[in-house]
Amino acid sequence: MSRPSPYPAELRQRAVRMVAEVRPNYESDWAAVTAVAQKLGIGTAETLRKWVRQAQVDTGQRSGVSTDESAELKRLRRENAELRRANEILKSASAFFAAELDRPQPRS
Image (cartoon, rainbow, N blue to C red; front, side, top):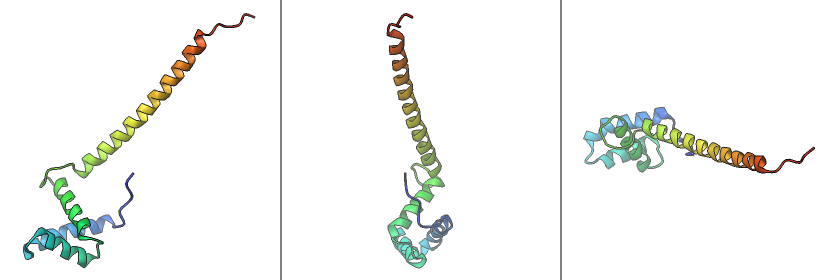
């Protein structure tokens, strides 16, 4: 499982908006991201760059796996793993009971 972000969602959204707003004032995306990260006290500019890229994917401006799709994949993988575990338990139980049925019963 991934650990929760130390940055609130509101800060992340604000930072992404700010990068989009100030981008024309800088010579590159990286310069804009670095400036906004420093202004908002975000640990590294790379963190903000990743937020911007993910926001672009989520809005369809960039190709990739959206946040919603990623969450759905994670949920389905967890569910799949649980079903596999349940199947293994059922297989073991059926083998156990089948062996019980094959044993000769003592006569009373």
